[in-house]
Length: 199
Image (cartoon, rainbow, N blue to C red; front, side, top):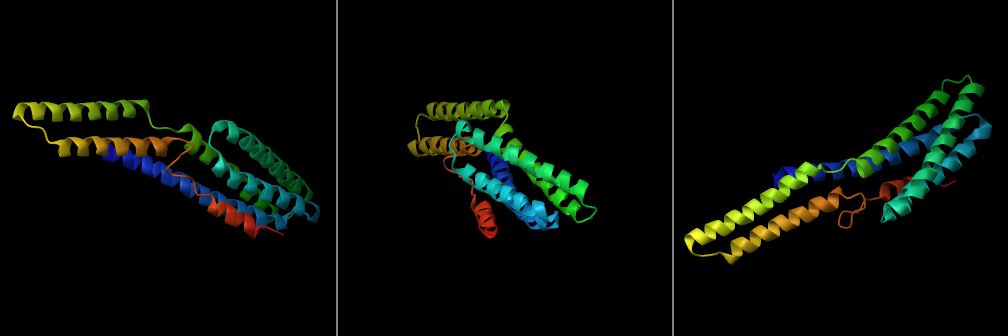
C-alpha cells in the first residue's frame, strides 16, 4: 500500500513537471505564431506572451496561495487579452495562418487549466490517508505484539519500520502539497523559453 501510494504521488509530481515543459513549448509556439497576425497586432501579442511567461516562471518561487493568487489572476487576464487579439485577427484577416495562432492560444489556455487542476485542486483522497494511517498503526501494533509473544524486542527492526513509514509519509505529504518544500517545481523550461523570446 505504501508503494502504491508513493507511486501515485510520484506520478502526479511527474505530471506537474511535464506540464511545465508543455507550457514552455506552447508559449514558445504562440510567440512564434504571432507572426501570422496582422502587422499592428504582432508586437502587442508578443509583449503579452513574454509577460505571461515571466509571471508563470516566477510562480514557482511562491510559498502559498495568497502569493500565487494575484499571479494566477493576472495570467488569466493576459489569456483573455490574447484571445481577444486572436478574435480580432480572425475578423480582420482572411489568412488561414491566423488559425495557427488561435490554436496556439487555445492550447495555452488548456495547459493552464491542466496545471491548475493537477497542482491546486486534485489532491490525495482522504480515504487513502486514513488507510495509510491505519496500516502504520497496525504494523507497529503487530510488531509490538510479536515482540511481546517472543519475549524479546528488536530495536533495529522497530526503528527501521518507524523510519520507513515516517519517510514515506513525509515524501507523500510533500509531493501532494501544492507548495512543496522538498520537491520544488522546476521552472527552468519557462525561464529558457522567456530568454528565447527576448527581442
